[in-house]
Image (tube, rainbow, N blue to C red):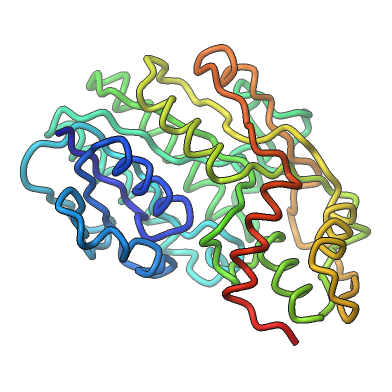
Length: 314
């Protein structure tokens, strides 16, 4: 039985990855320090013989006994609310944490996949965003702690690949949604769902003309799984290219939730907020044979069913 270490295992994406690798017959070692993760996301796995959980901060030395075949690095605050509240931890998990895991991968002769992000493109001047675009990032702005942590993470991963011959994979994740997102995550989808269910104002920044492209979590996990097992070591975008403006998205949520008290309110645009976000997934199609399958209407319906269980309706 192959063994895989998944950091950030109790987080939104990490927990879905744990489920997938258990389903595929792996021995899964989940690791999380729970500063943003929720143990409830993985507690259903605790009775299984092929699942272990380590409560650990990966910015400190990481030791896992026995063989390791794969490492998936998904530990990091990932929403603006989190990384503005925890800027130092965000930088450390992307730098020290990644360094520790690369060292572990080297010592175990394991293949490592790191979770990068569309935020490496910053507020893009190229649309849609392709992997060969270097980005437009403000390193000293409020989002810089996350953006630059991920950019450094890619750089040190490539250095280990080039200098040590380490088997590495890099996934650039675009906006992803689905069950197990935190209600107070601060990102647009959980915010809109929780505000609509409670009958509050859906907070739209600016005029809502900025765009996002939402990928359902099952599609993302499939893309990550294929990338890990592929022979491709350069970054690959995984996301859904179906682009929508935030104001259109707000109206979709209002129509789905159907709470007469819910409405739209407008606030000023945050600093360095990306105006456009759409992945070019040509590489994922050609190299991985991957495309998203869950359309937004179906994905939102599934996600709404989850949010109805965790948000109290006013």
